[in-house]
Image: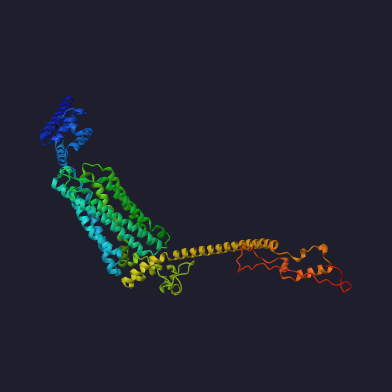
Length: 562
């Protein structure tokens, strides 16, 4: 046992001695600024000596201290040379992650095939090309260089330590990555615009279309601004890929990390907004279970796009200060590729369904037979159920009496004998008719609310008119009292002590026959002269009374003075 222990100690000593010798042998290849940092930092660390290669290679705190010193005093090229020397001196093997990126070539191929099937199938089956299809064609033109450049960068640079690459490879990778970033923003912007145009074409609700147009303007303006900022993030522009060899005093750059975080957050907000816009309408649609399943799959992939963008943002935040971007940015690039490819696949799914239904109508048909009213173009009345036939209504009549029971879902394949254009038109019409009943119910509810508001307004107007009439009557009575007291002195006010029976009878007859005294003994309305216009209220007529004729004594009648 003692001999074994002695052999182990000897082997350990020889191994450390060989490491010390190898590290000292590479000292002449270390840049001057890096060697100065090592000589300044190592004595104050736990290693205490530059000959202790094992401690220098394994101490992470020493590595961080040397890295901070080198970043402040050395150029990018000198830092890469020092990192390469440290890797060789410490005996570290080169790392590779290219096997983790290779499977995404299959996803790239599938994405391109999806787009080709959408464009060719839409033209062959529907015989129509809409604005969203032209945008998809533009997406294909921008997606192809995005895939080619991205794969070239993955194969040549990503998944490896940056100090294991030569300068020309690093510059080429940075230049292609800079161009690919512009294509990334353009592809996602075009995908969002195409999806919004598709929603505008399918749903005819005015408020929904206005919201889609507003979101589309937001997407276009923010994407143009992002591309402009990415292109001019450094001045001169060539500094983006010549950062290794360019002088550090002749450039101006924005904070690339803040720019990447802003772009990621803006993309997540836009994807989430576009995903939730049609949800209130789709939830209320009366769709068969097959179409509900397809819609659920489509929105599940849309949710995956948002999650991929969130994971990409987390990786960007984690490696924002990375000194080894070709190794640390492998995961963000993977999530970026997933985000773009899944977005394109989600965009192509509605048309892919049309192609699948055209090829296998028996298995994937989800359309239902319309009633005669639907065929003639008439719409059901508001407040009533849809006039579409239940497929199970086919099991009736002669078919049952004859002993043959047809498959109720045979009605689903009624379009297979029609032309491709009519098939697409009816499938599109199905989407529109699915929420037609709901729209009619909403309109009927709005009309009922309007009628109720009108009735309430009429009742309010009646109450207002009654109140005004009551106020007017009170004002008339008040004006009458004022006029009677100021302008009219009835004959009945003659002092009764000097009135004979004949005079009293005369006054009573005059009062009863006087038109001003009729109508329940109320005098006519006449406001004061200072208020009433002359053409509307004439001046009050003053009445004069002549004293009765004095009869001589002894004549017929009563004698004496009245």
